Amino acid sequence: MRWNAESGVDEALGALFNPGFDPLTAAQDDENVRKVLTFGETVGALVRHHVLDAELISDVYWWEGIWRRVSHHALFAREDSGEPRLYENFEALAAKTIG
Image (cartoon, rainbow, N blue to C red; front, side, top):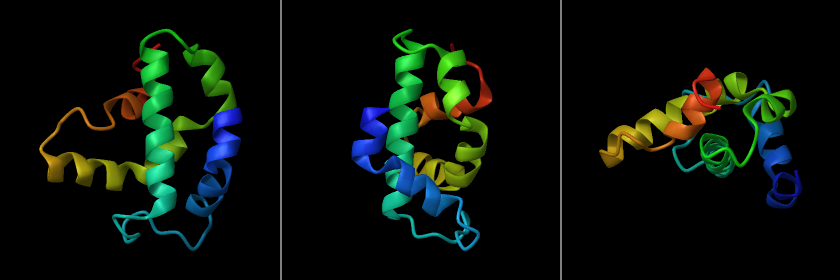
């Protein structure tokens, strides 16, 4: 929670859920999207390795909804880089396939 607050994830989430934000047309280098992707991927990795409890962290964040706001960017980055594992932990967290 401290990392979330200190890194500006709350503000980034606010921007992503603002009615004016369009996940399909937002710039690929959007700072808020990058913050949220990094945060979600890291939390997902911590859940995958049993450092964080999946049920607990899902009580705090709506991963499915957050993923929908950034998945377009994540999937583009995955394809563009040729790295199929990019953001896989975040995606698995949103799909509830890790824990």
